[in-house]
Image 1 (cartoon, chains in turn cyan, blue):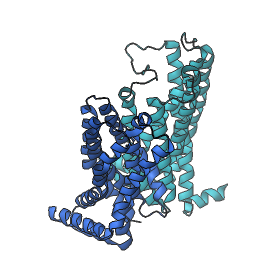
Image 2 (cartoon, rainbow over the protein chains, first blue to last red):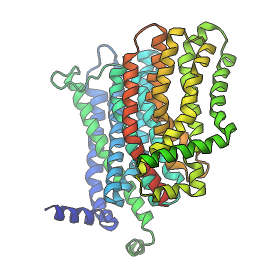
Image 3 (spheres, rainbow over the protein chains, first blue to last red):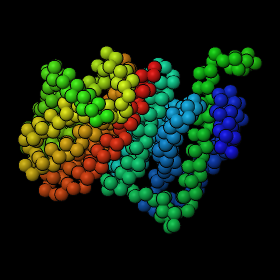
Image 4 (tube, each protein chain N blue to C red):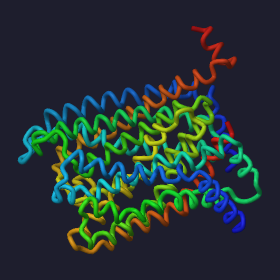
Length: 249
Length: 223
């Protein structure tokens, strides 16, 4: 059983196989991501009720919250795939990790920008040193560090391993980001979604938010596959199968 | 194994004492940076007292950061790092010895001179104890975590800025709780929680950081 799975993993993770499978998978992620994104944005921006306290400006959460979730999710994915790459020597996992970093950094940036835009009407300032905004900023620095290390080492394998180790070390920071909400009691609102027994959010606001969150996850899946495919082509550029592929074009 | 730990520790200390001026540099840097703040802001007791915990802690952080280079750089360049990795002793123990020597040479002097800087910055007397204790618990963490960063960047040309980019974010929890402990102690409140947190982070990094450093050194050596 185990051997069978292992064989399957090795076959799938061979660059050539991955290239052909991922090519077929991408539309299955990209199309639902676009549809759900449009639906979620429409529901969030036009249909969901106006908040009695924050007025219309609360609607930025339909971008902000999924982006913030993704920023942390992608870092964890990065660390896990880096660990897989390190333990089982699967090159594909390293490629997924390095392909994820810029996407995660952009989501973090998006969360920061939307957070500060939301902060202007709410707090009266674009930037407030609140716990969650600050930890998003730190997360952005962690992404930058990862990417800087990755690009400063010439040898590809060494770069993968070194930055992968950094991602694993950095993932220690993720729980600190999460618990910082409790550690520093600051201006930011308390967590409003995690309470599933009695959500403090209106259901008409919650559904578009969750739809947007799923859309963001699918979007990430599609983009990471596209980026990993490019990486595979680049790294295997001297191989026979890539040459055949190019000749066919 | 203990013997190897001891010998490596003594070797590093001895090497460091042979170039004494280099030994004093991080310490002078620490004092110098703290001195800049009264000059840049205002030498009034009220404003300095507010900034003091943060200024002292940030300066300590930067001082340790700048001295991290010495942890592996020379050994990497003259090949003794490869010799260490070839030795039959577990690399984790050797890393611990090197980090221990580094802390004795840079962290401990910072802790010892901190009361003086506390006086410079008008830290109230009752908070000096908290300052010393927080630095005593915090600076070993800085050396331990920093070792991971150095071992990843030691082979990179001009790795200095890169090192600070990847290491400083990891220093933030120590900075927050260290500076906060001094701040809270200045108000005459208990700092038990902050100290316990720093101690927990120290325990965590003593047990995990050398492992990560050993892996990082092997990655660096494999290129």
